Amino acid sequence: MDVSFLKIIFAFMAFSIVILSVLINLIESKLPVSIVQTFRYGKFSSEKKHFLVNYLEVPKNWFKHFYVFAAMWSTLGFVLVILAFVFKVPVPEFIIHFLDMVALKNRRTSYNATATTVAMLCMLIQCWKRFYETHYLSIFSNSKINISHYAIGYIHYFGCIAAILAEAPSPFTSLSVDHQSYFLINDINIRLIIGIIIFLWAFQQQYLANVNLVNLRTDKEGKVITYEHKIPTGGLFDKISCPHLFCEMLMYMAIYIMLWGSQIWPYIFFWVLSNQCESAMLNHWWYQSKFKMYPKERYAFIPYIL
Image (cartoon, rainbow, N blue to C red; front, top):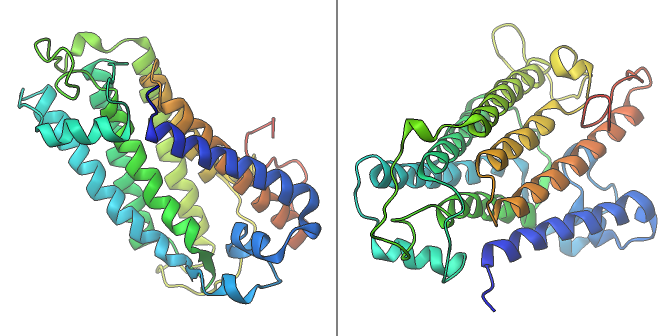
């Protein structure tokens, strides 16, 4: 039986976050300090510290490191897709072997060249946007994160780009190489259009939310005046506590719609959904405990639902 490494890794991460979330949310006080400290970070980090876990923590602003990797990796993936599907350049054999190794030896095509190209373009602009935000926009405090969170960032973006290529049509698969696919405008259907619309809306709203958060810590000239947390208002913040996390989930859902039929992307989407949902809930509960006047009508993650 063929086993997909990408499916395994994303299923494991999703399963882990769900189990740990349930434990943290229900019986946190009964869990070992080492587990709680590893799971929690940033403003809702654990007050109790384990001396060994302290050695496995790195500055939170190291988040920007894996966006450097993500930007470069997504650019490489997009260039490969354009060369293959627009300029009809053969894909090097070592890349095909690499995709066989991380996905399946007998990989099958799950979507056409046009969907592949659009989805890869979406990942490209999102990775570069996050690169810009973390390097030139976001304001990081002196908090720390567990090194596992740091490593997961690299694993996530490595897997997302590889997953799109792994189920792309020939020449990204060694099967049916005599029937190479190409980018065709006629292949743009209603599902692809819906995915693009959702992605672009979420892309814009996430950026606006991040700008909103930055403005809470800066003056009119853009200089940092405080590292304290304040209640964000305006835009989607009037509906939910974490619109930036909600929009992240929407963008991956949009790519799921574009790549409908994919065998790997559902695992990625479930991982992103579970991770963003738990982060949103922790943020929401923290705001409620920190600010007595926090809006009671505001939801945590999904407007009017959760």
